[in-house]
Length: 319
Image 1 (cartoon, rainbow, N blue to C red):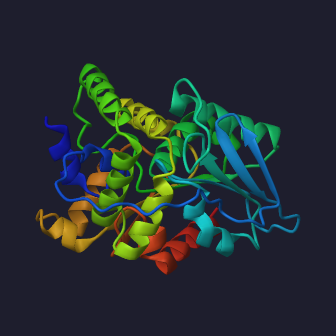
Image 2 (tube, helix red, strand yellow):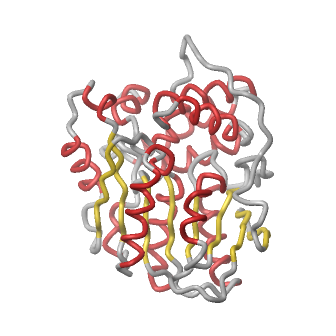
């Protein structure tokens, strides 16, 4: 199976990772320089737990469950800016940036395993009672993995375009998966900063989001991430296949499946077929809820902000 071609077939499926598979593009757009940003200068408290940099929005009068928001590959807490505005009144919030992303220092060793360990440490040390995990892309996959072993500690998972196995690799053997992951890690880790920034801009304009102006802005933020750490996170994701343990998730799990018609119609893939494919990869999840969002690529919080916030609020209201 040719990895690059399978990535192009899936487009938005965990697409934040697929950006880096497109390394031989003849025309790229240079990402403008930008300093790393955080979700808000008004965060009540900022601290680090393991490989997680946390912005805590305390709320003594919270009516709903606390929420932990985890962004995707090479992204920072800023992807949740609008979500924070919508949720801050009724929830206590913990907004994450993973080490190595958005200008945060990288850490040595396995990336996803450390992130899962850090998420557990965050919940335990902060004594967060039954939080809801809201994860995008890598953050969605991480949330599902965490829920498989720690459903007793959380209230639910709202996953945004992130799956328990990298799309179109579901029939690979573990040996094939490991070889692919290592080859990809070496390829991506060798990119210099200029190439890394170009990859981010090319991806954001073609698969990340619809509006090119927003795409350029977010690409500039993504380009402040550590390219080696990004490659290692991606390699960990390519190795991952946690489908067999999906039945262990005992809490409600919603999966956002975005669909941007111009992309998929060019491949003769209907919205129904795309959503069914996602649902098939989630087979065995006891309390699965599919959440289709039309008119969006990989970042529905930017492409369809009102719809996204409505869908998230509707899920939270059922818990």
